[in-house]
Image: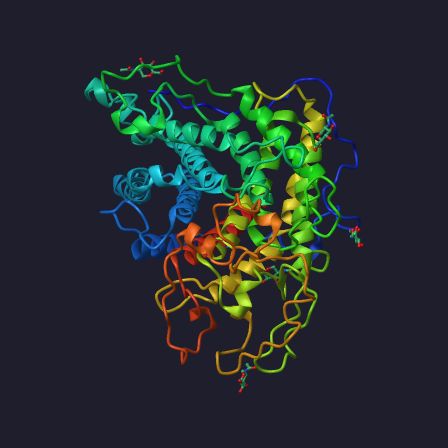
Length: 577
Ligand SMILES: *[C@@H]1O[C@H](CO)[C@@H](O)[C@H](O)[C@H]1NC(C)=O
Ligand SMILES: *[C@@H]1O[C@H](CO)[C@@H](O)[C@H](O)[C@H]1NC(C)=O
Ligand SMILES: *[C@@H]1O[C@H](CO)[C@@H](O)[C@H](O)[C@H]1NC(C)=O
Ligand SMILES: *[C@@H]1O[C@H](CO)[C@@H](O)[C@H](O)[C@H]1NC(C)=O
Ligand SMILES: *[C@@H]1O[C@H](CO)[C@@H](O)[C@H](O)[C@H]1NC(C)=O
């Protein structure tokens, strides 16, 4: 069994990119704003809300006998796994801070962690790995990220509670007990090799999506929609590759995926002695893809892109998030602050595009004087300071879109984690310069807490009597019902003629979406079938709650509520130190 791998901070002398005035926030915000509220101690109510969102998610939507959330689809289930792993990381840290010698407390804590961890183990078998293997490259990469999130939880929980030679129950120091109880690693480590194997196999499948023939590089989205390259697949490949570099613990299982079920059988002929952790091919993939994405102009969907045909100006919230955990990982191993600058600029642009001003720490529009039923002004990615997808107001979000805001906040939480370099991987960086970068990063993340809280509070107000979160969080702030809801032309802002909402609607018959005669997916309807989304539940139209329209409340919207609450808990907590 592996011993826990510890991560320490590099504090050696050498070059560093920091300057005395380093700041990641706009001018006038280099100090945390007074109204920023990042210095307010975290509200313990928030962690209660996190745990309640988690409990509702698992009790309402997870089926132990199937080892999955049966209403999810393959990729959304992988994301739900990431949310559970993230929540377990928060829970483990919380329990470590509540140390107590009461044996009864220990039972309660162990039971709480085991409840959710065993569900993840069940999901390892419930995950339809064979089907996902034949899906699009983004579907494949969510699987990689999901198991790497679980691996990070196992490492963290083992380090906090089960370090070799120590035990919080005092058993290890008791000479009377049998030797087998001493120095027992946390049982979750038993599953490490399985999770690592699946992450590696799926990363290798995804790696086949890298293509140099078109657009000068980049990941294709789907082998059956050849010329189309989208931001999400490339962001995922960056974040999954750097996470492989950082957290993949190695894999000795040479079994090819198709023979996964026969792993360990006699006729298996291993072709290699194993895959090592911290392989530079993962780092190379992350850096190469990052450089390509930056060149390709996805950061401004309306700019003319000379490398790829025609950009699709459609904005989705998750596209603004997945790259963030990749940027943090790239900083951790390179010490290059440019990754952090890019990440903070993106976060601040997103906050502004929801109609929120981090300098005054409030939404830019006064919504108290809105006529009944009217909705606030659209700023590009939200309104009234709340993150929205375009489909939220219309109430016709697909199962894909139901998952997007939760993904955004999951990766924001990862980005705003306390900064560390990985000493044995990162080039040496001077201690004082590193401390400046760390401080600037913490200060910048603090300025986001007010906005995160604003979103979390709105999301909480969409819960129904069973504690289930809705999709359209803004509604939590508004006095409206289906009777009064008054959507007018222009509520979604000026139409962008390049925008194709391919995640919620149909794909036009247009060469961007497939080489004529080559694309296997027919335009106008193919994607829905391809996505295999679960049929829409028809709901009564006398229902007063706009969040009951369309798909209604789902495991995916529950994951969104969990993720925004966890972002508030984690980021306000780190801001204190
Ligand atoms: C910070 O937030 C708390 C709780 O939401 C609120 O009571 C307080 O007035 C806020 N402080 C400032 C300076 O905005
Ligand atoms: C447990 O671990 C400690 C520290 O590594 C070591 O000194 C001790 O011998 C171990 N005990 C047993 C029974 O293996
Ligand atoms: C992009 O190119 C087209 C045609 O070449 C031009 O009409 C348009 O103004 C350009 N847009 C931008 C944002 O440069
Ligand atoms: C830092 O990363 C950026 C890419 O974001 C790159 O352009 C730059 O050359 C790197 N700087 C150093 C010193 O490696
Ligand atoms: C909410 O809207 C209704 C009309 O739809 C109105 O009667 C009521 O006074 C409003 N409540 C508030 C608090 O504005």
